[in-house]
Length: 375
Image 1: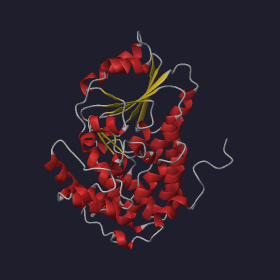
Image 2 (image 1 turned 60 degrees about the vertical axis):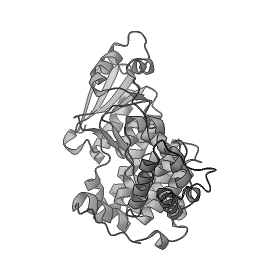
Image 3 (image 1 turned 180 degrees about the vertical axis):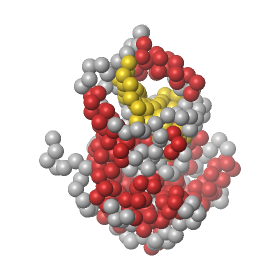
Image 4 (image 1 turned 45 degrees about the vertical axis):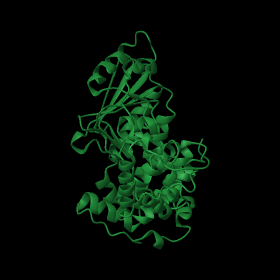
């Protein structure tokens, strides 16, 4: 058992808490193995009828995988160790999604990347007023994984494309609208919810109990932006997405909506234009390779039959990215040196080889997450 995981079983509830608050509960390989062992042990334990998954501290549930650990693997020539990390993490993500007992995930505070891999596939996903939910991988020259493309591909319209490319952070209302969460419970009510789950009087199912505490989080800015997001992010390439965002931001709505069947509308037009301009500006600062692969990955994920298929596709992409300059450079610039000035290679979208995204997502460089002969 990892020192960064704590467990308890009482009144039929298995409580599983990430205990690394000083690092926003970022997931190390040791933690992933420990989590998998606990879920496996509780699967057939008659003393556990449901699992509650949460994180220590008030700042976040889980900020994602341990980026420094990944950087050490990627730059130190430890590819096998890195791939083992991802295989075991993805198997854990799938195990949570298919778990035979209810898993209640409390995404209080920052929940990003690997944190979504844990909570985003749970049967009951709770957000609070402190929740900040995102798949921020493109900011480090990487691509969404841990089943993130599966969730992003099923968000309404083109919202998932926008969330993936821009690594946009969602509040509680946005996360519920995008399909990343099921219920909003104010953080001050979480202890009462946990008590009710333990007591389970009447109503008795976890979903019914959560609904007793569920409140309306307020309007979703993401939902309000959907008309012009759909118009712009439905473009076939990242380059054309940026062009449409620029057209909308500059008031050339017809150009931005030419393939969307109408003019993008928003309750407050000028803020929408500023938002679109900022999105275009941001895309021009991110890794062209990561953006191109991510766009293709989210769109392909929409057609895949299962979460496991999406995870396998993500693993093929991750296997390739591990050895690439942009991932190393992105982590260096954002996490190691923190100069926020990555030098991408290639530097522009026009320089990304045609057909590269498809090759990255299709080519099996290493053994898959689930062998073909696996039961």
